[in-house]
Image (cartoon, rainbow, N blue to C red; front, side, top):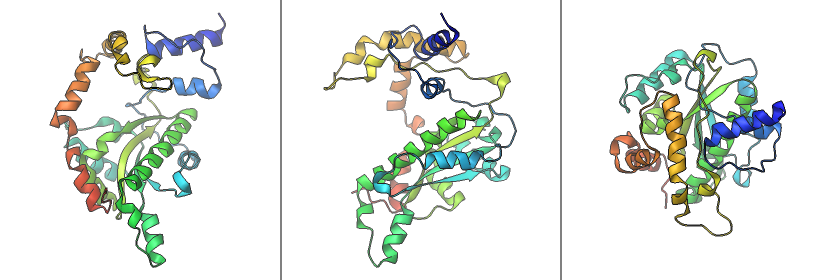
Length: 282
């Protein structure tokens, strides 16, 4: 087995564990890099390299954007005091007194679903942006934001940086919006901590379910996932054990996230915040 073949086999082993693995991956440098993705929550104190932020934004702008409306923005928080204020604001919404990966990362990127420019341009031409009252406009901006951020995360990893997405920023959506001065028709969809990974505290690749759990051909195969849950539980538990995590099952985690308002951490107020920001969600 060549070094390349072994490397590919190792990546699939980390991504799927003992589950059934796809056998016909078309490998490329980009595919290999994407399969190597891991969330990074331990960072060195080094500032981002010169040009890193411009690179991330350029790649984010290269993602698809619906109707070329470019309805997203990103607020790069590098001021340590401001970053700490945001970290403390979020920590108050979860059962901890601090979120170290936000504090440690040299940059906190706040990805904003941003229709404010569209609204202002429309009003400047003497009309009201009535389409922004509808749910699809909210979804369009949110989806464009996610596509842009994913491009940026891949770019970050390609230049030796690590990232972790932070949906927890929505726990205090109104407070975060106020802190960074968001205009109407915008909200922080999620954050992203970015920096150089600490090689002494490296994270592992987290396994995903076998492909038949998520891949359907032509018609949705309702219930088929049940055939693959047990094997995924084994892979998930092996990962948690290796990381020294609590022995929580995947299905148990889903149950908790679907039934516990503590899991929401304040996100149950998100609809009110979004409508206050001008999205009526009709």
